[in-house]
Length: 306
DNA sequence: AATGAGCGG
Image (cartoon, rainbow, N blue to C red):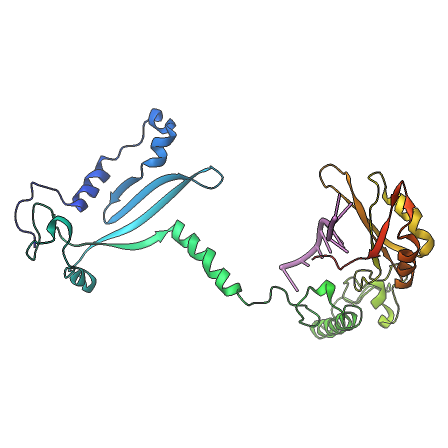
């Protein structure tokens, strides 16, 4: 245990406690001084719990409050501390004999601070761990074929997808039948769209043999009939493109690239046809075509970035 | 000169 003169320096642990007792609520005048508030962590010791409160500016220059809570324990020296006592002396104490020199060293009871919570550190850990987990992992998995793409982009969207849906629908019906209590309220006499009351898309009604009539076929599924038109004049509009390309076949979509903010045309567009042959003829027919004092360039579009 | 948005999970 400590020996010698204690008047030279007080124990830092004592200091903490004294400061803790001294802390007063900041006067309004001081609180308005941002720098003071930001730079001065407040330490409060309550029993064996020490709370440090400080204010910082985050990336958005917004003031954030950081509260750290520690448990202060007094214990017999741990192994770690024992090992530390064997460290080689350095600086002004380099040639001192073993043991503390009261001129440079304050010895006190061992004070161990056990970490309880620290929001900052917790956040940092959460930022790093998911990143490691994500490494080498697939981001998306198709619900239809488990492939490495979104369900909506699945190549089997038009074949496997509807089959699975139908299957699920049948299963849903059979379980609903099992749950049905005999003698319960009878179903309404009027023919329902579905026995379960769930919505059934037209293509799946009547045994699912019908194709959607009013609905256009899924144009996104295989978009191999899209062309890119460049060198459009700035005042070309969708309707102009529609007029220009309609003669080659049925168009499913026109996208004229525009600046999102200003609405200004970027001078290129994507035209999707229903049939690839029409798109091919459009390329042949319009590429090199003089339009609004400019020579249009038309080629196959690369698949858009998802 | 230039390869869209948005939908999800």
